Image (cartoon, rainbow, N blue to C red; front, side, top):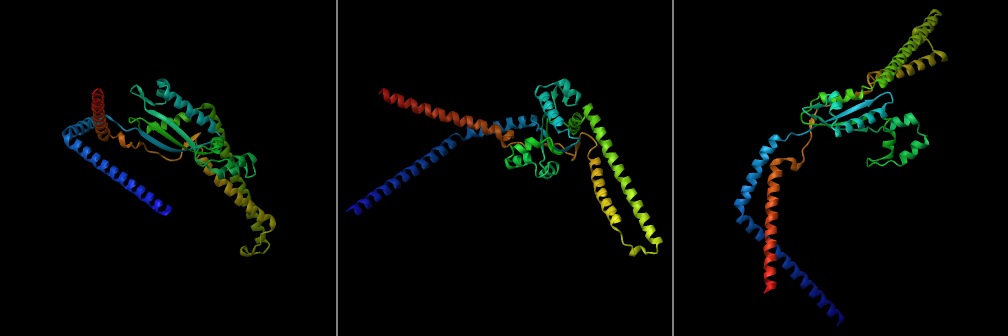
Length: 328
């Protein structure tokens, strides 16, 4: 008995589900029909709106100019990362405040307006270099690495950003800007007189190290030549001379000095200034968003307004009929 009752209930539920689905299907068909009927009835108005939007979009697009952007890889030398980041912050403040006197001095002001929008800088993370500088057993460094967040907003990056040598700088510019604007920003970062003195001393220090290493290599070469000549004078042949422990140590020392010398020379090449531009970045036009295209934006706005007003009109008439029925 209970089983028959359960089957009956299931049949009723299936019947109700089928009926509801059928009703929804009918309502969907009716809605599609009404929408098509509305479009067919108002096709001329819709066509005029689209054409008007396209015409207006055409003239607006002609006046609209896409802003520019430059992505620059820079190297910050002589431990001046803190100064460079502070200088970028100051420049952004001057841009926000439209400080024409300051920006004119940097050649970043033209026709009563700034030709630069914003400068952003972020470190190129190099954990290998940090480990070399701080040592893998540094407890503070270990704690920061344990808390490192790979989503971008991380403590390690913020803490060590002044210690990184390489940084990515994004310069947002107005459409009228040229490649000279990039060099103007670089000149601004390199104009601090005190830091220029520091830079000059650091460059002289690198040159002194290079000269010292070259002199040491020459001395080692002279010692090896003297040793070789002595062995030959004792009757030995050049191919059969066996180096003793001291001379072998000198050769190893020479190799180490040569490796260090190569490092100093590479450092000298990329340490010509406080901030050195590693890549030559060309200005690129910022990729416009979908709706920044006026050919799409204007017709879309006009059609949205038309359909919104049509819906409001329909709701108003429906509310009016319901109000009249209540009065009756």
